[in-house]
Length: 307
Ligand code: CP
Ligand code: NVA
Image 1 (tube, protein in one colour):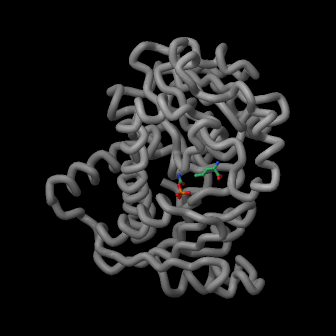
Image 2: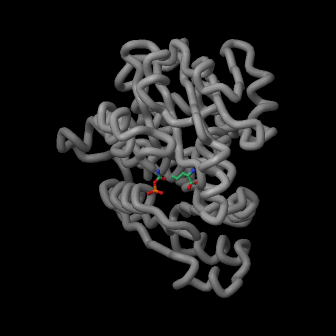
């Protein structure tokens, strides 16, 4: 395991599977009242330059369940908001804490933080990627389907942080991945370059959701305007017309196709109320697994840092 979790591109298939297996074990232990084998008193600094419900609560709960403490830092109440450089913040937090989670805009800020921090850095979402979410997503699909390799993962919508992470995570786990995005909203070039190099899985990119959805085992979608893109919301509603996961899309997928959404969802935009509520159990299992997957990431990275 590397020092940090910055993006799934940095992880091997074996490392992803180690995280998923650890997440399953920690979930079992937590549900059965079995103590986690983890040193007490570790602290996690949590930097948020964007809003969050799931990420904040699941990380803070997760470090508490591991016997430690989370420390919430928003830009407005830390010196980051007044311009203290990320490399100084990294070195200061490394003197107090045992790991840092950061949610921010540019991936370069996370990379910079990791470069200067001597403790593990975990990416809790950037404009480029959302690796913790996709680890939870893979855990959820594997729980429901019993496997990942050979399944067809379909993503319909904006080629955003979720699309980027799902393409890499799905392909690394041997899934076939199909993506439908409008031409002007395609996933990141670095991700498409990676997808082109993968030999044992199939990747397809189209602008037609009806093509992407055929025979899917799991369909993912996400909001059309991500955090930081609020001013583009109206323009995007027009660009993404036809990209709503509805009954017609679901009819093209396998009859037992799952639906996943990282949340928050905009019902009536990227997903209909009917499809969302029909798959709510799967979607909230996915939300729950943020807790277990992130505990696994903290467990493996922090234990690694002790050795
Ligand atoms: N899915 C997700 O990351 O949710 P939050 O923005 O609430 O953390
Ligand atoms: N793409 C969304 C994901 C939120 C969890 C965003 O970045 O706002």
